[in-house]
Length: 317
Ligand code: HEM
Image (cartoon, rainbow, N blue to C red; front, side, top):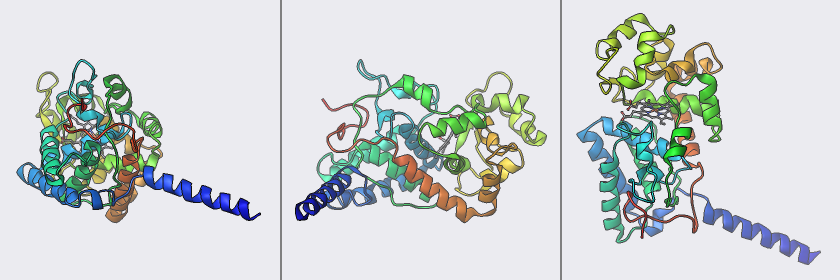
């Protein structure tokens, strides 16, 4: 009897040890390199001060990292004979940005820590949070201890990163494949409260959609012609440099910029949540933070999986 209890105790202790060793923790760098997080914050703030849009771009990088084989910094790998770079994927090419800021952060953090101990995947997660905070959004404790991949997949990026042309069922399905529910979908789409999109991404909507405010369509057509001007930018909501709830207000007014934005308020199952977030900013802020933590948990590498890259753009040799 006593020996059974002992074995049970051993199992409990061992499995909780295993859980600590392989699950993420906000305190991961507390002893390894206490200066890591303050350094990232300072550099993100400087980058956002220099260009407000950079906050949006850094948030998006973390999202595009996590949706393709998990949050493992695969998006940062440059093309090489052995790397099928995700930078060439449809959603990233001539669109994903902020790579130089991540390089700068990585160099500075490694210098301050004395050696490469902070993963590129963790830098992306912390930079996303610090960007949101710098633009007036909510804060959260970023879980840390991710390791970096040694591979990338453009093919997978093209499959997993959602398209701006998706309707609600397609978006729900896309997020479900990542273990995220409808609440996560609406909360995280609220990331579009900051940043910009290129004409190419919303042209179809402003010329053909019926669920669009005509005066908004006209406004957007002025800088996004039927042909040409593919890369001209338009704000994703009316306050693109501020993390607020204007995005959800715009959806209710049929002023969503992307088809996938307006899909969240078009008579479907997510209408109620859009109204909740619009009317109760605190609920949106809390849910956004919670869903960002959930997104940051997608298929990360720990223990002896992957590596800590010395240069975020390439695998260690
Ligand atoms: C729900 C599915 C989503 C779709 C279809 C989508 C699509 C897009 C598209 C097409 C752009 C414009 C890119 C360009 O024109 O170059 C964009 C921008 C952006 N997206 Fe999303 N997105 C989605 C979800 C998210 C999520 C979950 C986040 C973050 C939590 C996010 C954050 C951003 C940000 C911040 C920008 C602006 C980037 C900048 O200005 O550099 N998006 N998105």
